[in-house]
Image (cartoon, rainbow over all chains, first blue to last red; front, side):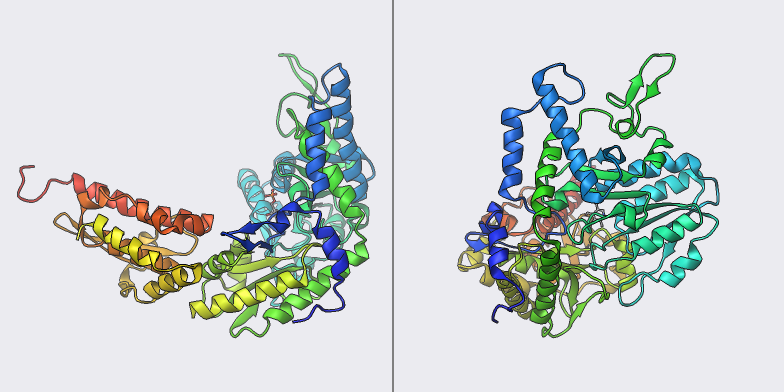
Length: 413
Length: 145
Ligand SMILES: Cc1ncc(COP(=O)(O)O)c(C=O)c1O
């Protein structure tokens, strides 16, 4: 196969060269072909350097010490909040709460809005949610006697928006939906969902874990009350997540966890709490990861969004074409608006076996239910193979992947 | 043959293969020839937890000898099962316990398998070992209880 003219190899190679791990080998000399970017992104050298530099020049606890380093670390941490606010189009950095990840962001909101729910109130989710955007709501719904309603997924792997319109009604208190499906790559019309939620006075929560590394996000345009993502999927370290919340909504919520930093004053007669975002950040935060996230966002923002979209679409089309000829291949979802995440099965083979053989050939993919068991049930499968791409994915990697897949299937049948 | 001797034979067989592809082709072949699993025992009661693919394992005890029927919906897993059953199947419980699964690392399987696969294999071995431990503790027939 020749390199399609639409994929500019010069640009990809330039970006790729900044990721040391992408030129390593696995299993005794097999060049790594990393196609598991949706699970976690790799980190460019500048992010790695930023973390090292933080520890050699800045490290200190934040918001507490009365010394030079404490001020420097606090400034770096708050600078990250500014950077994230600008990245998401938030009205102010006070709307940005740092969490451990998307998962904690969902848990935080579910726990702190719980008191508003009465028995019979409804939480609307979708059939393509990650377990992180299902289980926290279920736990809370059980406690409050609330009911979970589910927007179904169509055969093309898109949300049934007509069903959504009839599900979202006066009883709805929260609508929570994934922006981009981690299993199908479908981009959901979340602005429309947020508008539906708003029209019935419900809060809207958008899981942006997969969306942030695609088109630019503008929470104001989306009209959501909450938006969450994990730093590690955006070229930054693990252990840090972002929860955007509309300020007046955040202000109306009680604390999530108790501890240092989240208080105004503490006494055994009664404690008063800090304003958002600090109200929701108990304890010493992950400053190193916040510093890494600042650099990651700056790095990512410098890659032209039009180029990103173009590359993502070209590489996805190229991959679909490269594996399309494999006998018995089923690709799940063909949404009109999708990103570079391909979930598929090959008749007569088990996804786990394909994954093992691809791995033996140096190709890293994910196999399993991708933490979306309800969606798997809807698709009628227990597991799929998922290849996910990034700005660093080359046509050559896709060629290696397609050849390895063909070989694996040949060995298994 | 004792399980440890069978394990040595298995290791020797794998030493003949120089690349991963031949190893996997052999495991896949073993998987294709795994004896059929009794359909009535393909139930959740016999599922081994902790495996990426579904694994059913059903022991039968004759005196102190353990026999295993096992199956999986994944072929490589079936091959791994075939290897375990070759070493441990039809053996006295105390011989099974006395043979830790070091042959898997000697074959180089533990490092080559993905983490989830390796965990699944460990779950299967633990399951076999647990059953053997229970059987080994029962008083043997003919011995005073
Ligand atoms: C769509 C989606 N939501 C939520 C999560 C959970 O993210 P994390 O494990 O980083 O909290 C993921 C990541 O796997 C995801 O893809």
